[in-house]
Length: 217
View 1 (cartoon, rainbow, N blue to C red):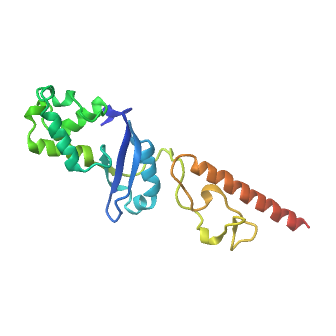
View 2 (cartoon, rainbow, N blue to C red; view 1 turned 45 degrees about the vertical axis):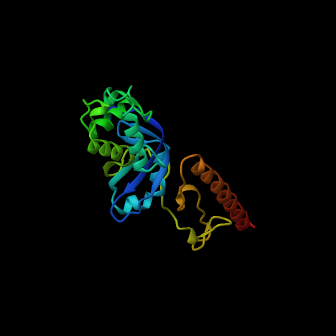
View 3 (spheres, one colour; view 1 turned 90 degrees about the vertical axis):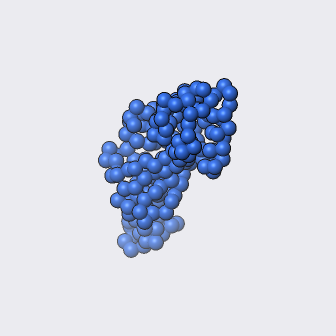
């Protein structure tokens, strides 16, 4: 829903649900953009699940949990107690949000689970369970890979088994050195990929310079 673009939540969990892929999960802040999901939670999941996403040809679903670390029953019980409060029960479900979520996001969850014109007191048990399902395990189907080249880092590369880790030189081709994303290394966001590029670049460059000087002797 592009109307939610710009909405963010400070704590959420995303779980990959795809054929032949393990249920990998990442958590953190989440941002809704005009083209999908971003923010630490989405970026971390794309890192840890990079190979699994490739194997399933970038088709599957993301399960969004807006109450991470909590069981569905606990969330249901909280909502039930909330709806029974005298100052809440006669108010419209969309207008009173017990989770502190952005108003537009809460409204979208309510509309997908229940009759959004109802007051809290009018919600049926079935609608309550549907709402909890949307809060704790909202399925977001995806198909295909972004082609706009906005990636922070690319997974894959030269296998470490063929690299001398002390000099970052090739074990099979003398005088060939590797650094950065040329090698099979990638990390989550937070500066790790920059540091890997700088560090491996220093080692590979120093080793290549030493090799060149030795060749001139």
